[in-house]
Image (cartoon, rainbow, N blue to C red; front, side, top):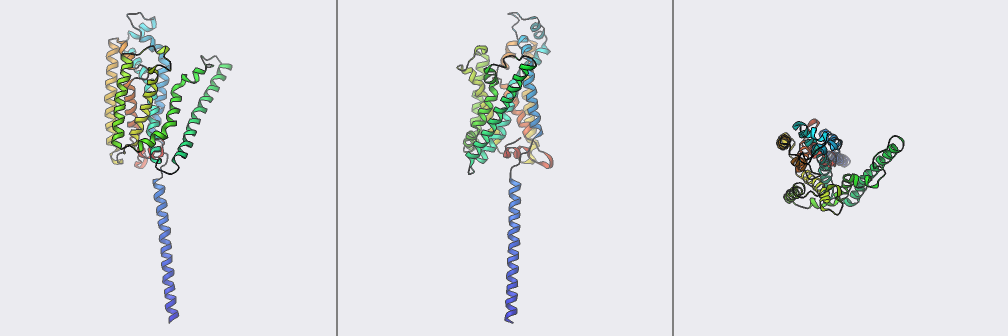
Length: 351
């Protein structure tokens, strides 16, 4: 009888142990599944990739049309070339050239804003984790090396083309690969300081971040407006000691930073994404309509001064506003099965 009771007790203990083991295994599986579900994965947003392509086309078109734009924006009172007078006397052509003149800065803003929108939030969220600075340093070195190697490869191809196919202008000058592509090196600099910027922004309250970003944008627009409309100086002879030269770098740095602040803002619920996207679309359409109207009126009046000032170097507030709104429109979207691309991409640090 005692043996029977002992056997039943042992059986119950074995059953309890088995059940507990199954429970623990189940909990481990659930925990593992939960962690996997919350692990950020790189999610490509097709809209953002298309916007990158559009920015490349816009920058290329801007540089291709620069000789014709410069001739069209000549002062009729001072005398224009034959081509310049023909281009400038046609309001439709002048308006189109005025819009194309905005595409150079617009394209640069798009690239800087896309990077800031995804890279800064991703780094900011990781800044509270152990080993952040070591991992951030590795990632930064890798990104900067990719940029540097890309420039070297392009330089090698250009030099080979110059040597064996046809001569290329200024390809042998050091300036061509330094200040001649200053925006590439600016991007490398922004990537290098991104871990520090992200760490600082993460420790600032959200409302303060947004308020500081708004103040920076207003101050930047005012200073850039002064440069474009009041004191442009001689762009041809402008060196690194000229403060106007540094305004281009400052402008794109602010562009990179405010996009990062926007990316760190709490994303709306997936169900609210269509409504938020419609708001951004309306704002984009409104700004684009104002810009096109101003360009059209200036072209009809042949006010080449206004057209030139609106797109002067990197000072264009219109280019910056259009780039920011388009980034927000493209980033605020959902993918297959309702995936929130805005949230998933920012957490993974990829678009």
